[in-house]
Image (cartoon, rainbow, N blue to C red; front, side):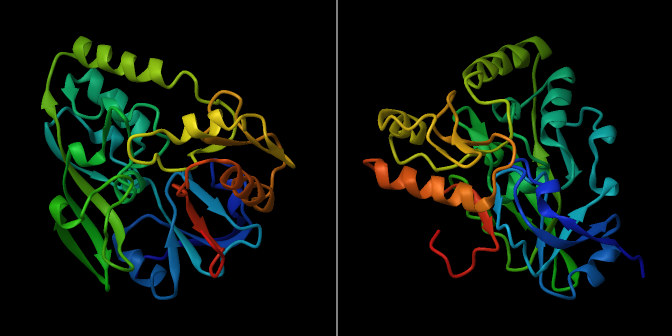
Length: 281
């Protein structure tokens, strides 16, 4: 049976916010190795964005899919195609543009791999994964299973996968277009994202309330620049928490709480939280 590569790490090494304590990492490069990897309680990590991990780490093993689940090199311009869950989303968006394929440009700048983007129904105000997703393949209960997109109950930053499922592949449907026209739309998306910080962050911290923007609410409360330790509300965009160098998860949690206490509208966290079981979200 294929085996995974196993090692102890600090999860800050794998998260875009660069916080998080220890865990046992299982690097899996074959589907067959998932049988052993999922034999004990586990979590799955992608690009490590949209994720806040406790300073204490997590007791479960952490699974990361390897190179054989990255199909960016084999993407040759098919309008409907299966891609591995470890395929980097930024590279996929760029390659689709060069090949004259439309449907992904609204995801420009989302720092995710395909599996994580599907699991969160990642997106921007210009588009989200549900726009192109047709089907997924998951490893669950020791076997592969295919699910159509409409079975995932896709909604704003939400996809309902079976309990314990590891997303292995996703089938997308794109539309033929002119590369220049796709690039023009990407330019619009890029211009809208210019105000986002370039330093360490985990993406938007809070979901946008219906009909409003979490960033606008935080800005209106005068909270840009609010800081706890090395965690700070970004000066560029109120819905981003940045790590100025040595922030801890404790710093970030205290800052999130202060934001919620000082804003006029209840804000729901968009990030996934690991290692905080029993604590308020």
